[in-house]
Length: 264
Length: 241
Image (tube, rainbow over the protein chains, first blue to last red):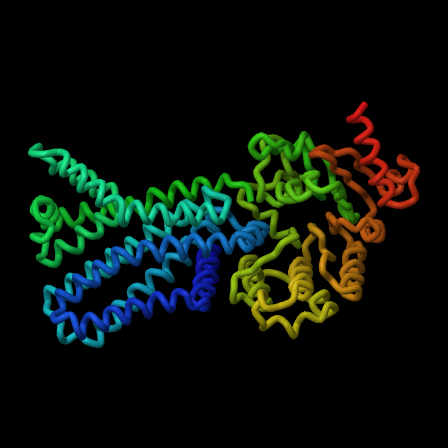
């Protein structure tokens, strides 16, 4: 455990000093500050911020994570020649990467809100917390996917391609396919199928969890009504959180297994 | 002592090591030689646990290398390619490696080589901004830092200036009591200066293992370079016949 913490802190200190993560935090700080000033109301600001988060966080996280881990490959070899268990090394790498990106997201969005905190209504504060938590979970999920890509694909360029394709499918293409499925299914009862389709994509899951907080579920039309009914209560939110955490645990467990057997 | 017992390894359909057995004796310096792609680096990585063999076993000082890697606390390793995180400095690297072994209180440090190679003044600069030679000197100092009973040095003098190269070779040749040294280099004359024993790998198989003198006698050649070249030619001849 100590070894894992040492490695995670070493990684985190390196990532922070590389300035990319700083730029990422500043991007969200600027966006949040701008939206709070000009969006006209905290709910609207949160809604825009949620959209920005759903688009930017997965992309930045998976690309940065992949590039960072590929660049660390020789250093990982050096660490593997030390008295270090692979389990601890893997955990340290993942935690260092994820903690830094999550911190950048929390600070970037959190600080402007703290500065303008008095504008927030009770409902909006709750929504903000859900947004922060969902963004953190989405980050953890996409760093897990990045880790899986790097462990599975040895070629850097190919790996980066796979990472970007993963983002493209989950954040963009998927919704198009879902819409197509809906339009093709006619009058049939599509509620169960929609729920399954949504759970299969962490970005969709995050979107629903945040939007339900915003009382704009009506904007989602028919499916929004379905989701409101199923996810509105605390049990629904817990279910959503559970499935989202599976989106962290599953790729991470698979990557850890591959990492333990890998030849470096 | 490092013992390699019947180790085989394939990457996909390419067989890199075939039933390799060799031992690297305590108190002696063993040169691991062979042409490019003979399996030298894979063998070293197998000893370190970076590569998992398909068959066979590695024993360190008589005991099987444990999967958790605790035996690596006794190994000082200098790798062929070392790239570091963007901002890491040499000082931080040394501190980090010390912490991984339980912290300053737990390990006795040997900073002789660090002083001899005069790398202290570079320790506060990011490793990536240093010249390749300086980085290599820091790698060497780091490999010797924890008084390892086993030293594994993959092309240790590549990129070093003559003075540093000499100092490093002296450190290798010191033959500290109880220390096992495994060293590779593409410069045979250099290995001839420091090594007592030779393990010769060709196409993933051990073709010769024994003392430097025995190798020269067997091949009737005066230098290690000629002896190795002779064995490679003989091998090609056998393959053709």
